[in-house]
Amino acid sequence: MRYRKLGNTGMAASIIGLGTEHLDGKEYAIVKETIGAAMDHGINIMDVFMPGHEVRQNIGKAIRGNRNKFIIQGHIGSTDINQQYDISRDLDTCKKYFQNLLTDLGTDYIDVGMLFFIDTEKHFDEVFNTEIYSYARQLKQKGVIRAIGASSHNPIIATKMVESGLIELLMFSINPAFDMVPGDIDALSYFDTDYDRNSILEIDKKRLDLYRTCEKLNVPITVMKTLAGGKLLSQEHSPFSKALTVKQCIHYALTRPAVASVLVGSQSRKHVEEAVSYLNAEQDDLDYTAAISEMNSDFKGSCVYCNHCLPCPVGIDIAAVTKYLDIAIMDPSTVNKGIGQHYRELTAHGSDCIKCGSCESKCPFSVSVMDNMDEAARIFGL
Ligand code: SF4
Ligand code: SF4
Image (cartoon, rainbow, N blue to C red):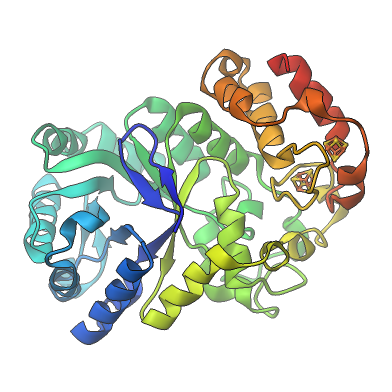
């Protein structure tokens, strides 16, 4: 397993994590098998948003004796009032369900207290300008949670949360299809409608800006909806001309700026093993560019950080250089801060480019890589 730091929280998460949604309603033996497989493969992060007692208790039972092996994301505001999954912004209800989560899991702490489902300005106000956020802060002061996070599907609201400095981790829906949906449209339901395929042209700037902002501010992203509910795995339902594989979807998410871990929904040892097989995959099996580059010529010219253009004879990590360059262009003040430092820590830099042109001939998106290397060298000074 490989691990990435979770921003400033002091924690490090496995790049493949466990989404537990599909364990809801399953018998204990399945929960135990799935979580056992996760532990066997070094998965150390899981998200538990489901409000029901039974699934929470089954997860608690499955991790008994191994609680400290998992970073648990637990949500504040996820409820099942009237036996239906629901979002609550009522403080007492939020407290009750969060306390139940601790009890059901058999633990006295949650690693990341997640403010649940912040997708609109109204949600933002209901959580951050009320006692719900104060409650999260109190939990952190008491050590009941180690960090405050939030989940969202809306890049505009998510950017607002990240820039506000109020959260330390963001859970966000990332996959190649959602990334093409304009930020002000609800991506969750977009592909359930009779959408216009010609509207899926390029990576939405608001989403890309969100990822770059997270990287700049050192707010890590954990990823949900990696497979777009399975739509991307089917040629018929994918908005692209081809179906993608699970590994390609995981790789796409893991190559976005700031992404620390992809939480893959699993309900068996087989599912977990399929997800972690990503770690031993050949580069060719991870390459998602063929699927997403055939959409539309308007997509050309923007780097998607896929590294399809490697190898570079002088060892430049072209995706990393371009990612840091894009963030520095977006916010020049980062050049002398963390982003500049990350750039300088790379083993080869824009100034090392010998203009062999091999990258540009391989890039499916017609990116002017050599110009980017020159620009990176100019901006970062090496
Ligand atoms: S330059 Fe092209 S091939 Fe290389 S990382 Fe960017 S998009 Fe991918
Ligand atoms: S042109 Fe520069 S960045 Fe591209 S492969 Fe050659 S040396 Fe590497």
